Image (cartoon, rainbow, N blue to C red):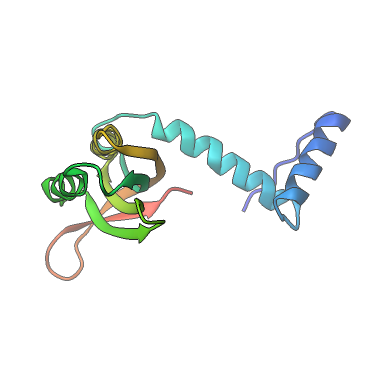
Length: 152
């Protein structure tokens, strides 16, 4: 681990200290590391290079009485079975459902799939949470396969 020393003006330091306390950090170092990870992650997520991979959670709310919407959503997920790892379905009330779909794949494909699903008529409150990963081919267990490791 490397030590970084930085100087900030008093007002910024106080604002940072209050922010860290509000978010439950026990020390400034961990708070700073999380902010730095978040910023680097956001920049990496904007990289649409063909080899950029991610894991993601796609959440959305929809009215299950909307004509054929549940079927369209399920069909869309089946059409992208290589991206969709799992979906959790929650009944919020008599009309509304929340679904969370865990995705894994190329960043552009995950984004495009999420955008198409969120754009379905009747889907509300769609949100994609991306986690950038580093892809590494492993040659363990006989067959080469891809391992995705969360970026630091």
